[in-house]
Length: 418
Image 1 (tube, rainbow, N blue to C red):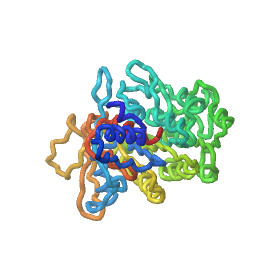
Image 2 (cartoon, rainbow, N blue to C red; image 1 turned 120 degrees about the horizontal axis):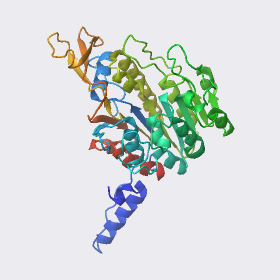
Image 3 (tube, one colour; image 1 turned 45 degrees about the vertical axis):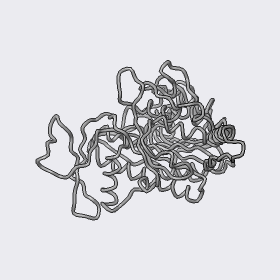
């Protein structure tokens, strides 16, 4: 990437015009490059682990063969590669994938916005904040999990979630933080709104080493909420909401304790974040994530993946509706990688799938028809597949075509820092 391409969009345009003018004949008139459309707000939505087959399965199951997901109705689309810069794997994890988005640099798996030499990199969230914009993150994972963390923190190991929480308060200071992960904000032996060692998962318990970060957040001016009623009643200003010990679901194989029933839904959290952030006259950057797509794909749990995909798509609909009323808003939807090696197949009792080959899930109904389909998993891990990206709003056309995942940063950084 050359230097000009990394400059803020308006400055780059001015330099191009200047170069054209200097090269033009004395009697001619220099052609001017059209100014890039102004973008005041950016909403970036991650379906963690979501590939093309996840989107197609959700479309068939929830809407039928003539239906279109909200994320697929966004007018511009492309593909992103997902390779990390890892010494032992060509398949990314969420930390390296989100780091590519948030910094424009590929790095090793497990890294949170540090390069391969473990040096911290500037992040989109921190850069947007420094440029005067409001910032926020919403996720059904822990708020300090790899994907949101890459936009607002630096860590050589994604597991340092208590230090990532501390960095939110001391360094990057996002205005809105909503999701799970209360356990990382409280020291061991200090249960919070959600009791330690619940029946659903006896391993869940407070584990932080940075002191009581919820108390520190309140002292720093954050409203702290932990219930739907408290979230609904929260006013303007900085907002911290933690609605689970860990993730806002229980990620297990189907019928083995799997639960997807967040205390507050992802669309609801996203709507509240937009209400709070939109009061900033300089605009905002909001990162939104549905983590359950990835976690249940790791379990080859098709029904929960489909449930999470629908909540993700309802969230995209919320963002799209908000952007329709605020046309200076760019909305981008992508997955950081594909999980499960998923394909959508016809129901076929003679299919080659079987023990040691692949895991078929189904048959599942195609809505509004008598047809059925199967979701065929080839792995419980991530794959190196390209992922689809769709977008709407000013400069959304820049996501057409095939690009490396670092292209997200190349597009968003000039917008958020200019």
